[in-house]
Length: 530
Image (tube, rainbow, N blue to C red; front, side):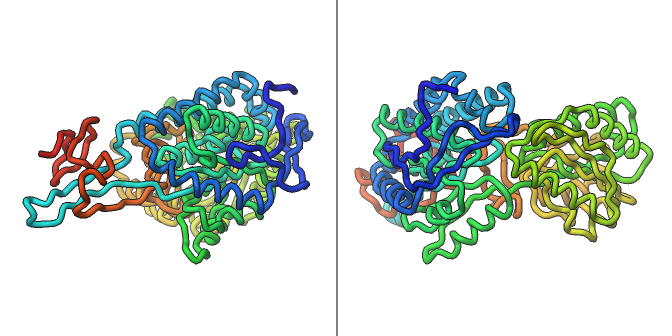
């Protein structure tokens, strides 16, 4: 296909396109079972070094830019992405095999993320200014705020070519914080990545950002990512992907002579607990059958919040629920997965689960075309689940394992056996939640977001969203990867003691012309300090 921007297949090192090595790779279209028409050149260590040193130099001035100027930059990126119109969406669909409707939603979310970060930083709330005055010299004058940590490496995600990739949440939040970004573009959607990268470069030029504030490196191998994480100029890493990939980066960053933080989202089984109030009434049960089937099959199950586990106490109502859910999913058309490798891993994961003792399948694996997958419902007893850790891990794709517990005590034990999760959901009545508060509490201890009577798919982008959870859902449960609070990952606190007024950052001075809300001597205030 043709686009106003011809895909070069090269990497952006700062504002310049560079080829790197002679090694090439292609992105892939699962729907047609063929490579896309573009060749991409693998970056090499020379490009890694050049991009990192450019970012290090750019940080010197970028960290000093005003919140207002960085906000203009973020908004300009969103404008440039939208300026592609349907051309970007067409490339998105070719590389992901996702429908045009999904491409539109993801573009809207990506631009919303950028603009919401801009709206947040112009208030300077992200600085978290705290002031303790000297009280006439009886104690030191202390003033604290958050500052950016330095250049960040972002690893694009396979399942979100826009919202979690080149200009996705990690990039948007790091730029908002004042940190230059180097993206290791995901090879499954490298053309989409190059188009978005060009949008960021144009926005940087238009708003006067330093060269090196952003780079985009192509790579299909581990070597480029490893070299980026180990480079002395890099101060932090953002990653969305598998447990194996995230843990490898985490260990690599920890092995440095000066370790750096890795904020990795590494997947989740997103357990859903059904209490009797959600299953005993036939109409309510059917409502949950429809909602769960839609959640499981959405995006061919390729969401990090896909409901991979369903827990409930043994009953005739549970049997009816499993039967109705399986029948519903049997009628859902198989969908093309993002890439043959993901399709292969999904099939292998299902095969491994079905091969475990005590696991039975209720759905029919409908045959599709090329690399399409159908939704699967498996079942196992609570006792077998507790004793078999092989059944606790995520299978990325449209599969859910129903765990039939003997009683409420076993249900609590099953929940307590879980590792950390992004989300956990409880379905039932208010009375159920009160009666089974120990089960709810056990689930709360293992998730970043506890959902009452709602499916886990669907992640709102706002300040109250917590997208992260205890390990292994993410490497640090204190932080979110979604919403304006995600900026905190790329900051550190610093205190200024007895600093002259004119040398203080503006947000910490006595004069407060912008009315920034600050914690002054223990009380929040937007006023000047007398």
